[in-house]
Length: 141
Length: 126
Image 1 (cartoon, rainbow over the protein chains, first blue to last red):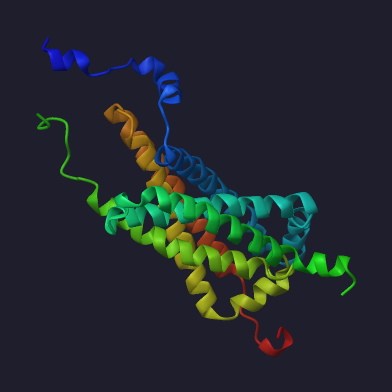
Image 2 (image 1 turned 135 degrees about the vertical axis):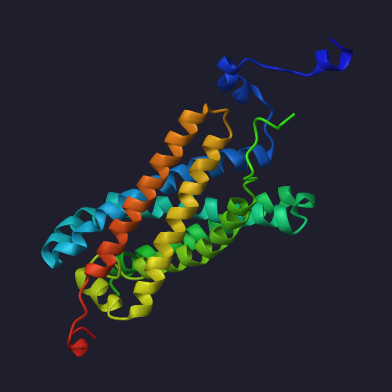
């Protein structure tokens, strides 16, 4: 075996979880990991979403009986939290496109930071859109 | 070296489609989220859905939305599997499951959208 071949770090497929966890991660690695997790969650949600709207075929009563569950405060809060997944996947997706098509490799770390700032602002804005009626009701408007 | 391992499909088409559908979905998804939540009723009552669905443009956008989302999601899922070295039988099985899931759920969603009736007197709703 040549010298260079010895220097190449290899690892057993058995320990890939451990190896992956021990790997030094920069913003790009985290973006990759979060992009996968949010993507998987959104895919699961899409299936759930089609299933939960399927009562639309059986008319008003069936649909609104089902929707009652989704109008409870904990589930409304979950819908807001889902927006975190949507926002991360959207903004990081835009970042990926910029890296691929617009020389974004030069500024991808800055883009990652901006994504978080824009994401937090949009998350709070959506919170206002979703709960403004409750907020106004609370203050007697 | 890759003579016996590669296929003619480089994945370039799926890569570019993933980006195009992704960008379209950003716009559609933000619109969908705002539309469904700007008032408590807009996403959760039958009247609101029925009223929207009187306009065929909403149906067309929804059909497009669910198709793009399903393609983008399942193509992304396949992208995750592609990161691992899979035996050919496993690869074919996974693709089959993903395609069947995609076709079945898209057909279900189409069926839901088309099942919502057009009302004769639209003034009663608006």
